[in-house]
Image 1: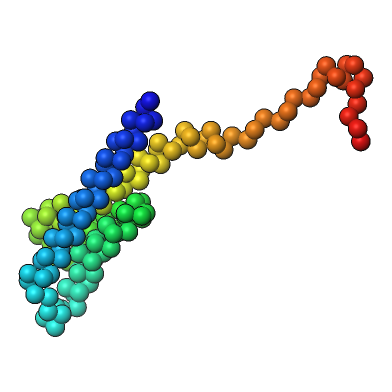
Image 2: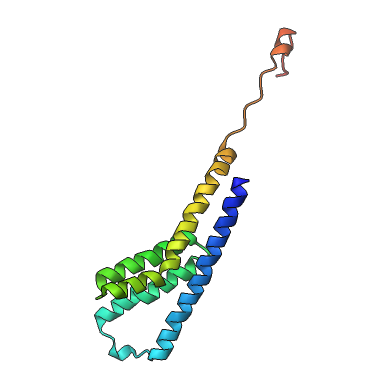
Length: 146
């Protein structure tokens, strides 16, 4: 019963992360369309920052639909790399964390799926017990054929 409840919670969290990822990817697309993306005006440092946020974050969110752990890790790593490479203000950093929040949710879902798999995994990995020796047949003088 607890297994079914945790699977239901995992499914709900997974879909929340997916819907949020679509929402924030849509916002990034609208920002690039609305602002007018002119590559000639971008400095090399800004290109490196853009590589991580939003491009790395978006790539991680898209990948997380198939590989939650890897996609979530790419999203969070891109967020962290942006904070080291780019000039991020405290308020801008908070907005970036909110925009990358699906990555944290995908990582959490991946972790939950591994934790809920573990008991079943152990049961499946247990080797079958070898058949017991026919003790009563040995007493009767039964010998197996060669």
